[in-house]
Length: 207
Image 1 (cartoon, rainbow, N blue to C red):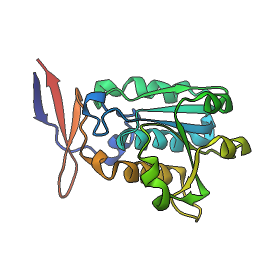
Image 2 (image 1 turned 30 degrees about the horizontal axis):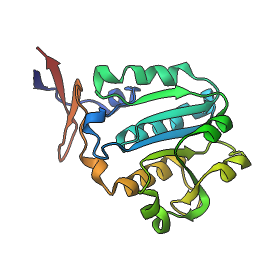
Image 3 (image 1 turned 90 degrees about the vertical axis):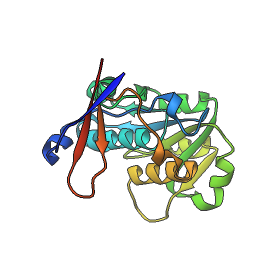
């Protein structure tokens, strides 16, 4: 049984300090049996911590199943995901792979590489939606040439310079056609109470 208690306002600085990834319980996934795994290439612990964190946040919020990092091993990035159940609920997961090219080669599913040099998403998303198991590859500082060859689709959300975080969000939104915006996070201890002005959070306790 859940008891919801109004939590009041969270200051921006306090909100920003919460560095855990959220997670979606598979049972609440609007896509059903769909599994989209995000591979974030070439993570650098010091320079990329923030943007790699945002990749994880967007992957979780827009209904991906998990995020996988390559590059430098960053235990703090992975540890933050393990704390998700305590605050925001769900089962979104993460892991690290040392050899990303081998991982892509051996992946059993469709491989979609997001790159501004790729084909327009609006012309190919309908075909991509036919696939239910997808590895969604987002670049780092430098994307190895092999990735372009190994991908089943090289897809662009635009042909101007932009962030991999933006590309990830737009792709997932287009794939799920907006259904990801209505999903819920079972067993969450914190829930946002939508408010026209200000910030309100519901604290959820169990009995």
